[in-house]
Image (tube, rainbow, N blue to C red; front, side, top):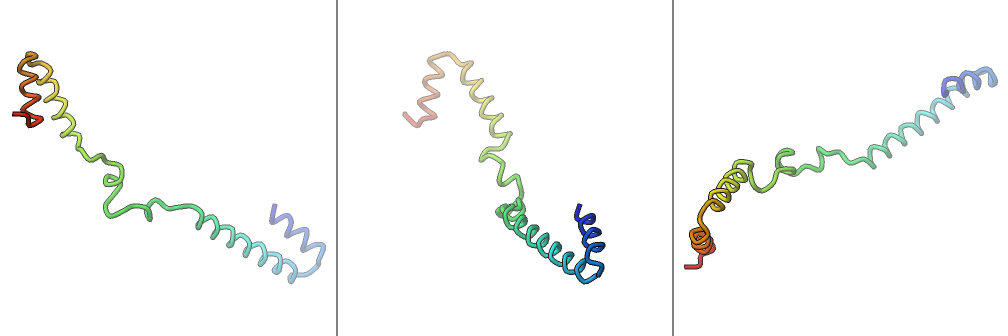
Length: 95
């Protein structure tokens, strides 16, 4: 569309000076538009703290820690009620 407008302008004006003036204005406005767009959009690379995405996304516990905790809870659930109660008090530091 811009090129069609430039061609119409060239035919109507009959000279190059108006085309280059028009092209200068269009290029300047496009540059400002791109700079504004660049300023508005945050880049993820600049938001990252030291480290990588793992540092941002990862939980405080690793998968191995979670699996080990689930296994311990399953073993605890398999104990008789009295032993489970005694072990619970021991872990909670009630002697």
